[in-house]
Image (tube, rainbow, N blue to C red):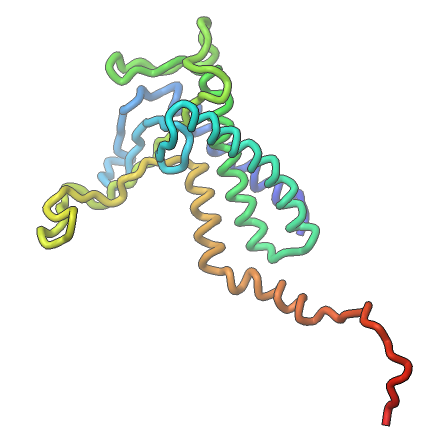
Length: 226
């Protein structure tokens, strides 16, 4: 496998992810929603989150900084890990999945690192659209940018759990509720494919280990062959 193919995949995912986020930031206000081609189950819905995939939050402001720094370390380590996968000739499918996960993490990391510095704030009440490189500075400092999400697939809406369901009986139910972005999708696709095809991906490595011959074993010249 050529490293060039992996680099191209990462660049492609990053390009699609960042272009879509820039477009949403500069054309939508927070909370704005449109139906794609009039479809109820596929919508563009602009929201921002503190940095975790699928809009999850953790630990407030300090948690945001810790999460961003952790993701930064993980992305840096990911460069060397993927290079090691290629060098050791892991299954190409596994390496491509690892590249998808890496590209997704890097895409959201860019938001967390820089978006607060280069974009103005968007207010859902004023319904203003953010501007790029505002004269008065961005809405936050380095490491405090918010991740842009926009893909929304409410396939089932206005449904309710049956009354006999524990805890949630009678409550409103919606599938699929999370709003996500291209980076989140890349991470999820990479992880899901690895889980589904893990036997195929790692079978090759197991065969290599089984076929390895120990060449450093001591030789006993005193053994008599009959």
